[in-house]
Image 1 (cartoon, rainbow, N blue to C red):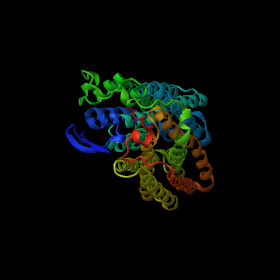
Image 2: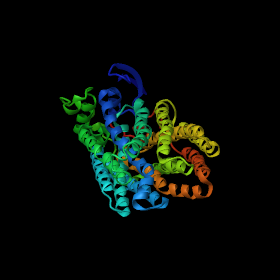
Image 3: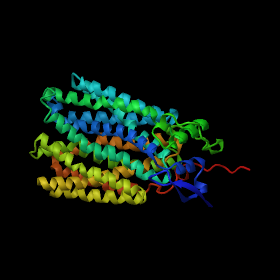
Image 4: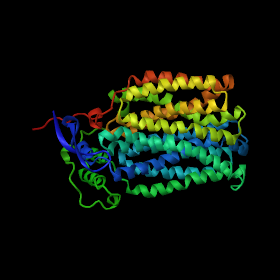
Amino acid sequence: MSHTIPMPSPSTNTVTTETIDAAASPGLTAALDRIGFGRVQAALILLLMAGLFFDSLEQNSTGAMGTLLKESFGIDNSQLTMINTATVIGGLVGRLIGGYIADRWGRRTALSLNLLVYTLGGLISAAAVNYETLLASRFIVGIGLGGEFTVGLAILAEIVATRHRGSLLATLNISSGGIGNIASFGFFWLVLGPFNDVLGGNDTAWRWTYVLLAVPAVLVVFFRRYLPESPRFLLSKGRVEDANKSLTRLASGTISGLRKPGPTQQFVTAADIPIETKSSYIEVFKGENLRRTVAIGAASWMSFGAQVTLLFLMPILLVSRGYSLSDSLVFTMIMNVGSLLGACAASYLAGKAPRRLTVSVAAVLGCISAILFASFANTTALILILGMTFQFFTMMLNTMLSVWSPELFPTSVRAMGASVVNGIGNVAGAVMPFAALFFFDRAGVAGVFLMIAVMYALLVVAARFGPETFGKTLEAVTEKPVPATS
C-alpha cells in the first residue's frame, strides 16, 4: 500500500510530492527523503571528496615517480612494482580495519583515523633513507587510504534520500577517479618537470612531492569534525536521540547549522530501530550476504585490477615506446580526461538506469576499447584517443561498482561488506600488475591490453549474479522486515 508524503525537490528545500512505498520506507528513510538535498548535503559531499582527491594522488604517485625512485634507490621494475603492491596491500588492511571501526564505533571516527595514518605514512616516505623504509612507509600510507573510500561510500549512502543515492555516490569517484586522476598527473608533471630543479633535482623532488601530498590532508581532518554521524548507524545501535540530533543537523539547510543546529527535532522513535544483527565480518560471508560478496567481489577484482594495472604501468609503457617521462605524464593526464567524463556519465546513469545493465554494458565496451588500443595505438593521436576511450569505460565501470557495493549490505555490516568487496579489488591491484609485467615482457603493450580485455569479459559474467538495487531503499534491499505488533 502507498501513501503520499511531502518531499523536497532535488535542488532546493521546496516541497514537492512523490509516492513512496510505505512498506519499504520506515521513519528514518521517510525522514531522509523529506530532508532531500541542499547546501548541507553538498558540503558533506565536498568533505568526502577532498579526502578521496588525496587518495587518487597517492595511488598514482608510484607510477608517476617510478623513474626517479628507481634512480634514487637503484631498483628495477619488479621492485618498483612491489612498492605499488605494498600500498595496495596496506589499502586492503586499511579497508578491513576501517570497515570494522566504522560499523562498531562510527563512520566519523573511521574517516578521521584514515587521514591521520595516511599523513604519517606520507611523511615517512619523504624521509625514507633506503628501499625497505620506503616500502614500509607505502604500506602505512595504504592503511590510511584503504578505508577512506569504502567508509565514505557507506556514510554517504546512509545520509541521502533514496532518489539521489546513486548519483551522489558516483560523485565520489568524480573526485578520486576523475578530477583526481587528471590533477595527479598534472601535479606530478609540474613537480617533476618545471619545479624539479627548485625542489633539489631528481634525488629530492620526489621527497617534497610526498610532503606536499601528506600535509594538506590534515586540513581535511580539521573540517571533518563538523561531519554528522550517520543516523542509520546511530539508530542501528539504539541511539535514537543521537540519530535525531544528526537528522536535525542534516535538515538545518545551512552550513552554520552543522555547528549549531538548534533544538533537536523528533524524526524517529524507538519503533524505528531495526532488528539487531551482529557487526562482524562473519556476517558478510553468510547467507545472502555471501552470494552478494562473491558476485560483486569478483567484478571488483576484474575492474579494480585492470584500473590499477593501467594507471601504474601507463607511464612505463609510454616510455618503452620512446616518449620522455615528461611527455608520458602529460599523455597520461590527457587520457584521464576520459576518466572524468566516464565518472560523470556514471553519475548520471546511476540515477537513471539499473546497476546490472550499466555495469555489463560498460564492461563490454571497455573490453572492446582495450582490444582497439592494443591493436591500433601506434601514433600519438591514436594513443591519446584510444587511451581516453578506454579510460572512459574503465571509470564508468569502477564508479558503478562503487555505487553498487554499499547498497548490498545491511547497516550493521555495510562498511565491512563494502570494504570486503572493494578489498577484493585491492588484492587484484596488488597481483595484476605483476601479471601485466609478465605479458608486457613477452608481448609488449598489446599483451597488457589483451589481458585487460579478458578480465572485462569475465566481469560481465560476474555482474549477472548481483542483485538489482536501483530505485530501492536500503532497507528494502538489505534489512529484515520488522515483525508486526498490535
